[in-house]
Length: 154
Image 1 (cartoon, rainbow, N blue to C red):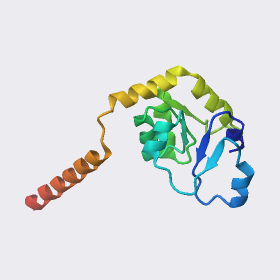
Image 2 (image 1 turned 120 degrees about the vertical axis):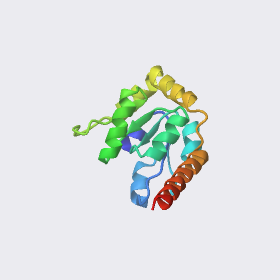
Image 3 (image 1 turned 180 degrees about the vertical axis):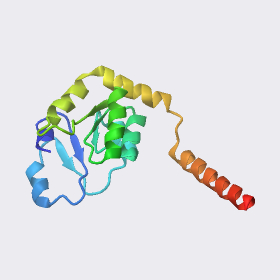
Image 4 (image 1 turned 90 degrees about the horizontal axis):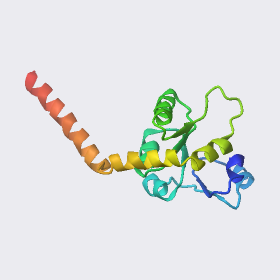
């Protein structure tokens, strides 16, 4: 968090359970802490870059908004998604073997490389018709169909 305060860009951080002491320590002119969860679809549209752990919801919201991602993975699933993001040129991730990564440099690398943002915008354009609500409805309908098929088969 201290490295983010050193950057010239504005930063919005949602870190649940962060103590008032730590918030005060890392508070800076360009750093705002949100005690409440952030609406990622909206926040992503207003961001230049999203830094997250690589959960599917946050990552999808970011890429669907055409924003590159810096993934700070904590689990194997997040690492796998981070590797796909890097392979697609949609962002970067921190090397899991790195003892002291420069988040500031990774952030600068992404923000200064127009190709990364362009690829994220191409991703958003490709999936511009994606609708989360429709997707949920399709999943529910398919699950119901599978249940009906099993009921009639027995």
